[in-house]
Length: 166
Image 1 (cartoon, helix red, strand yellow):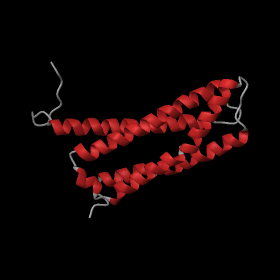
Image 2 (cartoon, rainbow, N blue to C red):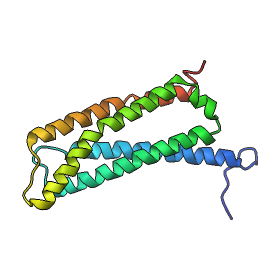
Image 3 (cartoon, rainbow, N blue to C red):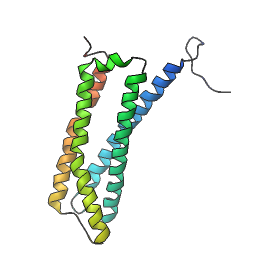
């Protein structure tokens, strides 16, 4: 027998189930991105080993895929959430959140490019180690990503409370 969580003995509507699913999936993707960014930040250090370089490269692919999924789920929430598209589209905080997300995406490009280059070098040179100056360069980009990412939850929380709506 299926388990149905219901209030007042009424099963949730299809729209509510979709809204809950999209909201939870959105939240899990945010956690995934933060976890991957934390892992990359801890692994990308001067003297990075070949195995850690391979791991960071795989994490970077997962980061990109998770970001694309997050964007897709986020816009699905705009289209199919219980709050409706006008709740999001008319709120300047929503657009600020999108702007910050895109800023993080842009800040992630230089690390990705370097990781691709390093990965190619590591395949052809078994003793390849990225130069410390390039590592520090990537660390600055990761730090910049963190500085932007930290503001996004505040905008999301404000939006959830209706702040920004006229």
